[in-house]
Length: 309
Ligand code: IMP
Ligand code: MG
Image 1 (spheres, rainbow, N blue to C red):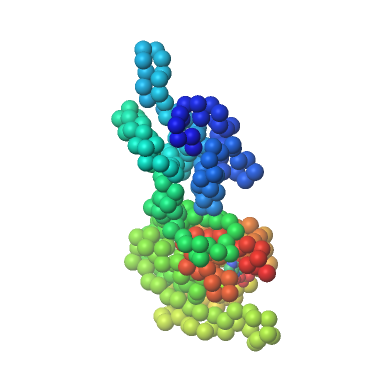
Image 2: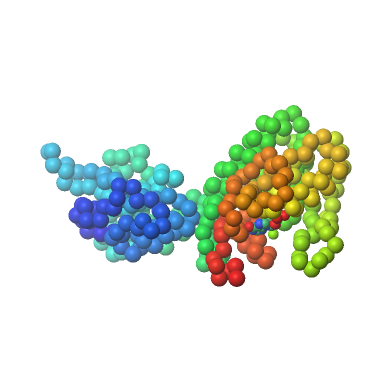
């Protein structure tokens, strides 16, 4: 960001009209901190445009004498962001311009950010906060906290409508569904009940089939059951569970999964509610683990090649 004349700087560095956060399409950033900020936005899956708009601030007669071009616009948040790294004297000048901009354009949301504020700002909008340690091993964010919350709310609403007048039982299978089920149940406006089960997973040691490690507490006969899953991959786990639950003679049985990795399906089981479809890649976070790690990430992402090996 040119700290002196936004005016001259803008014409020098104005990138293509809409420079969104697509890899390999970096505009000519005026300052390394801008590039760093764009990478943070990319990491969190937030769209951005670099210097898409200039705001006239002062005229003399017909002549525009001063204008301001914020560094970034984030359409998902409807927010302009101006980055600043530097000297107090220049900050004062910038603050004056910002005050003027807010007076003239009261409907425009704009934030002045110091370097140390980046993560804090993103946290406020639900995109963090994440220390280096939390995200070590993560390659890409597929679904941000905000995207997940929005989708879970939609699923909760759909279930509330479809099951109106009933008292369904949500059955979750540990541990991958922990975050999803905790959020989903709070988005359902019906008098639901909740059950959790645990099953043994295949360990490649020729063990004698799936074992129920923690069984249901209540009788599902005659109940409307919704099986809540984290992710459906081959479909074998789900196929087993649906068989197990059917044998309990519920009045109805449907499946609600956070993620569906369709490309890998071997056993096809009908799934009524799907949060997101995911590509054929190993994903972690929001309950999903890799060797028991990453369950506590507030987003869903992929692993770096180093972490996977
Ligand atoms: P399936 O029996 O092959 O459908 O596997 C489903 C189970 O495998 C899920 O409940 C997860 O616990 C685990 N799983 C499958 N894909 C992933 C992934 O990408 N990340 C984390 N766990 C996964
Ligand atoms: Mg797992």
